[in-house]
Length: 160
Length: 156
Image (cartoon, rainbow over all chains, first blue to last red; front, side):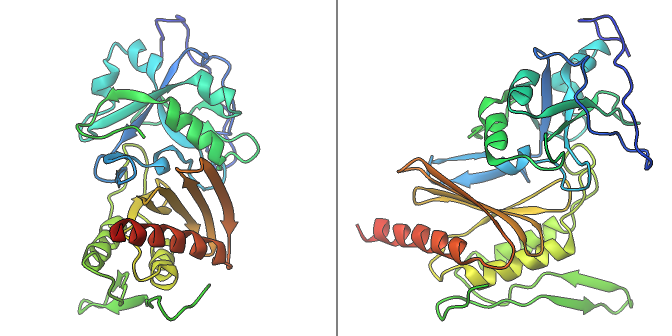
C-alpha cells in the first residue's frame, strides 16, 4: 500500500494468538494525518433540546468494550494513497455521513492510533485507550468529539 | 436499584414463536406517555441491526444489554421524565441519553450492572461521571433534577 505523502508502506502490526491486532501506536502514522469516523445518521444522531438541534451522540466516539477493542477509523492518507476520494470511500455504499479528527488530537489526549487492515478495508485503523485499550475516559471522548469536523456533512445535524 | 412509588416497572420476556425457534423481544410493560411505543420499537430495531451497521464491524445491541436498559428505564425514571434517546455502540452496547432542561445525561450500558453514567450541567458547567454497578441512587437524583427542571420551565 503506497501513501503518496510518505511514499512508503505502513508496516503491518503485530497479531495476538487469536489473530487480532495488538493495540499499538503506529509510528508511521503521523501527527498531522487525519482519521475518519463514519456516521450512521439513523443511529448516531440524537435530538438536543438544550441546544435546539439534532446532534452527533458521544457514543460515536467510544471504543469497543471487547478485550483489546478500539474505535474503528479510516486512515485518510491511506485512502488518498489508493487514489480514491475519502469523501466517497467512506460513504460507499450506504453510509451517509463522516467526521474527521487529527491524529495529533488523539495522541495529545493519551490515545494510541494504530493500523488494522481488514480484508474489505485496507485503510482501516483503530484508536485505543492508553491504560485500558477498550476504554476512553470522559475527557478523551469529549476531546475527540469537540475537535472533529465534518468530512461528509449531514443536513441539519450539528457536531455537538 | 432504587424503587419508588412514582416510578414504573418493566419486565423482560422471552417469547417462543410457532416455529419453535426462540424469538426475543424486549418488553417495557409500563406506560409513560406517548413515547412508550416508540421506545419498544426502538429496542427491536437496535437488537436487529445488521452486522456492519456502523460502516465497520458493528454488531446489533446484545439482548442482555437491551434487557437491562429496558429494566433500568422502567425502574429509575420518574413519571415526568422526558423521552430518552437510545444509541447503539459498535460492540453490542447501548447508551441511554437526554439533552434537556439544561442537562446532558448519558448512561452508557456496557453490560448488565456495568454502566458509565455522565451528567453535564449546562448552567454550572459541572460534569459528573460515575461507574455504577448496583446502586443507581445518584443517577436517580440526576434524573429527578432534570425532570423537575422541566416541570419548572413548563410552569413558568
